[in-house]
Length: 192
Image (cartoon, rainbow, N blue to C red; front, side, top):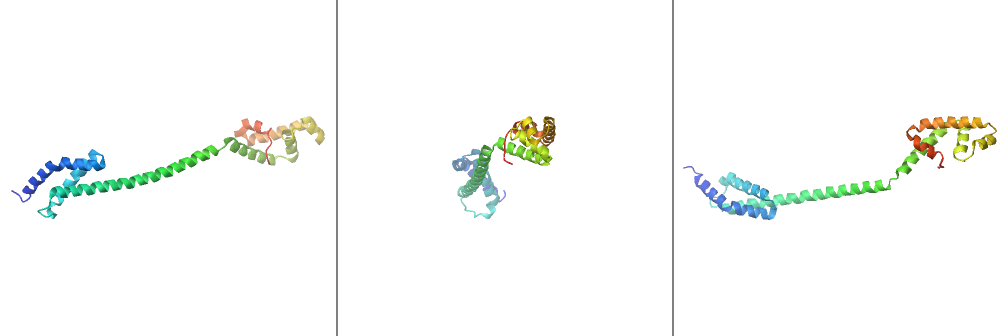
C-alpha cells in the first residue's frame, strides 16, 4: 500500500459527496452549468495536485470550496471587464454610426454633383477663345437668341451657330461623364 492511497480514498469520497453540491454552488453565481462543472473539476484537480503542500489535517471540502469561490470571482470579474470594454466599443461604434447617419442625411448629392459640374464647366469655359466664350454666355446665360447675338456683335447668325457649336464640342469633351446633365445645367445660372 502506497503513502497516497488513504489520501486517494478520502479524496474520492469527498469528490463523490461534494461534487454535485459544489456545482450547484458555482452555478448559483455563474448561471452556466457547464462552466460551473469545469470550475469544480479544475478546483478538485488543483487540490489533488497541491495536496502534498497542505497540512494533513486540512479540511478538504472547505479548501476545494475556497478554490471554487476564487475561480468564480475571477470569472465574474473578468466578465465585468469584458462587458465594460464591449460597452465602450458599442458606445464608440454607436457614435460613429450616428455620425455616419447624420452626415449622410446632410449630404445633398444634387448639390455636390452640380458644384462639380459647375466647376468643370467654368474650367472648360476658361479655355475658350474670348469671342466663343462671349457668344456662348450670351446664348446660354443671358438667354439671347442667335439673331440678337449676331446683331449685337455685328456678325452673321451662321457665325454665332459656328461659335456655339465650337463651345459645345469643348464642353462635351470636358463633361463627357456628365453629358446627360450638361444640357440641363447649361440652361441654369450659377455663380462664377
